[in-house]
View 1 (cartoon, helix red, strand yellow):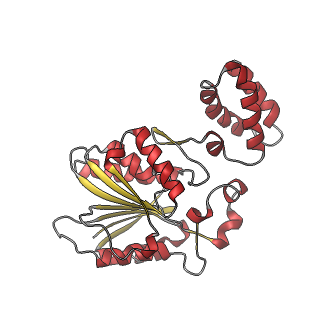
View 2: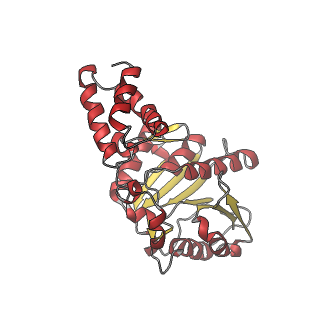
View 3: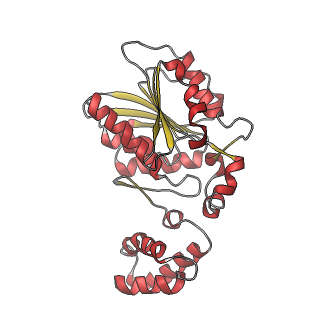
Length: 277
């Protein structure tokens, strides 16, 4: 099947449920995938993919792949599909060190909290060859995916993966220069604003926070930082993705750092916190 034939089949099978731009986007994913499928099996593979799409399953889970910057990472239902906003966070961090701290040649030890697919540390380690990271997550299945991504990108020697319930941690690792995190931050009451393909397929453990304490992860990060002894000559940098509706409240948790700012994503929503302790 040539590309035009594939596109024709996709239009025929999907046009009742998806608009032309969505189908075009699916083709962007499916055409490269089919190159690894034996020609005789491609019609059957297209049927399978289309049926999965019609069931509401995200294309990233069907193909077990997600684009993240210049990387292609493995994902499955035990991990979130990396969002553009998280990619923005990585670019902000990388640019900050590249512009101000000669990040390409400076050693740095980081901690990523709630790593999921490992997208944040894997991206940053690939960009900064002298960095090391510890990445923690409560889900061992997610950590298995993070390990595969680290090997695929070639940064496994500089990434330590640990299964850990972050909220039970009493202290931070020693000699940290950087903390990154995209923890669960969506309130239960925000479910009505979310698309069914997210609610039905992505891990709720990584999405939702208790309605009664939506900032629980950020509070614990802040408390652990307060307890951590610091070297004034080597400030700890904190970069976090946050709930856009709780920007001011989240920023207030880190005012003790002395330097804390709320940054917007490319859509203009308050999405990130950068603090220096």
